[in-house]
Length: 301
Image (tube, rainbow, N blue to C red; front, side, top):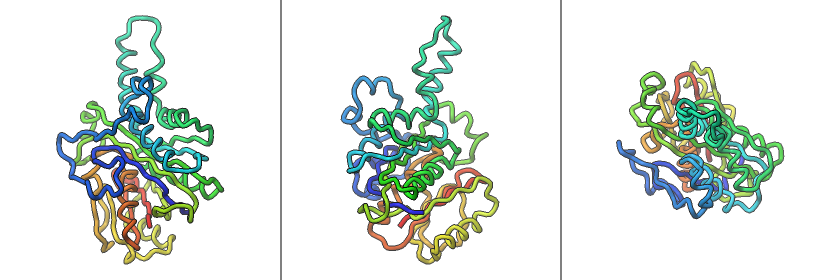
């Protein structure tokens, strides 16, 4: 189960938008780091821009660029998001609690649902094909990617896959209860276009796997590599989040030092892997172990 990445776009806390190789501009995340946003007016109409929250702006812009760089219209759209449009959710709840009238504006509620991102992309691109949102905690991007790979396997010629999440101040109150991490909550969106092998110039996603009740990370990685007939010696780089076993003798980089903490940041790791693989012949393995018991594995070449 594999496909070629023909375009990939990221917006987040790195200067990655529109860059040929994002490794050249990577900087470790600072404590006061902010999203490096492009000029959204180039991609989104002023009327829509006023209505859209930051996560929608990021996702729509990244998706639009992917479509601009892809000859074929997308046969499917698969989006992963762990927490959805948090700013709109927060705004809706605050309005609901404080409103004194009988009628509430539906806009904030409509834009607060998890599938708002995929729906907004569909409308912006005028795309009426298969459209799916995957919300699986820290494995949301991986499940969206697996869906996209399955779409290619079923015969679709061009598939948009992506993930987006945003941070709000309230998340910091939950952090001690939710996750142990040295990195601050951040926002980010990464979208990529997939086509069948042989149709693109970038590198291929060879396989993706998720484990929702992982008890042995080392065994899961070994099985994943064996199923893909890949020897650990052929792995050039391991991009990881959370704890991973040190048995793979490749270069290892914690991608959260560049993304910060958001549950679909494995999508940005996919961008890192894609750009790194352009000048390499070996494999890149992404190990997403942000949350204990949940494991996402993605293989790039």
